[in-house]
Amino acid sequence: MWHISKQPLIILAPMDGYTDSAFRQMVKTIEPRTIVFTEFISARDLSRSGSLADKLLSHDAIEHPLVVQLYGKSPSDFTESAKIAEQHGACGVDINMGCPAKKVVAHSHGSALMKDIGLACEIIRQIKQSVSVPVTVKTRLGWEHHNDLIPFIAQLEEVGLDAVTVHGRTYSQKFQGEANWDPIYALKKELRIPVIGNGDITNGVKAKSKLKNLDGVMVGRAATSNPWLLKEIASTILDSDEKTFERALLSEQAPHWMTYVEKTALVMAERSACQRFRRILISLIKDNGISPQLRQLAIKVESLKDIQSVFDLFIADIEDKPRVI
Image 1 (cartoon, one colour):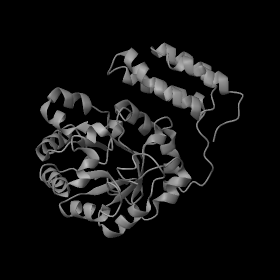
Image 2 (cartoon, one colour):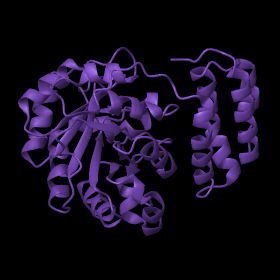
Image 3 (tube, one colour):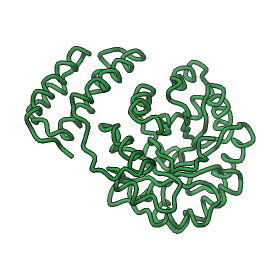
């Protein structure tokens, strides 16, 4: 059971467009103790397409224990897709009750489920009756305020919820303002199940300071261009390593990123994989103090050869500059 641990859990958040199998493998190679989640997957689509299941649920053994995140609103769709996920080797099923994207909420998915506790409970109840793996939820503090968080999750716990991750913002906040972890600590005091905190974790020291009475931390956006963050957090929390961490040299990062994009190119056209990788290259320019002038080269990559050439230029650009911590 992935959610039961004597040590705090270090978790990579499910992020649409980022946490595909290639990225999860990269993270697990860097820090094997990380628990990884899939990108969110439509329960409706997964329950209706065997070929889609084979595509979206394909993964490498290194990714275990792998948690599959599902979104939707139909209990029957969730039940069927959860069974499919378990059959494909998932070690857990997580229900998205927190995504604030308009196109998601407009269909009563994601954060919208926080407004329908009856439906939310029915979804958990039916999934629990259908699979043997842990069933968890990722949600937010509430719709407009956090007053309903404890009653909401307490009812989910009563129908069998195994663990919950809470992002420290309401639906109304989207990703604005600072994440508020205090309601998450209060929630933990009221539940028997594990509670994981999420929001604004950018380094190991901050992760450790935010942990407090919680069972783990989940890291999202900050890890998309810096998967080494998971290693820093694990070292700080699990190994009590108090040293000051420096960002891995870009020359050390580049081989990992090349392997990642090569694996991505195995499941989509090389050109598409490289175009998708452009946003990470842009982030690396900012994160590593690379000359902004090289941005124009980064946004034009269309082949693996292009990416390797850009990395060579990036490394040459910063090799004589002080390291960014």
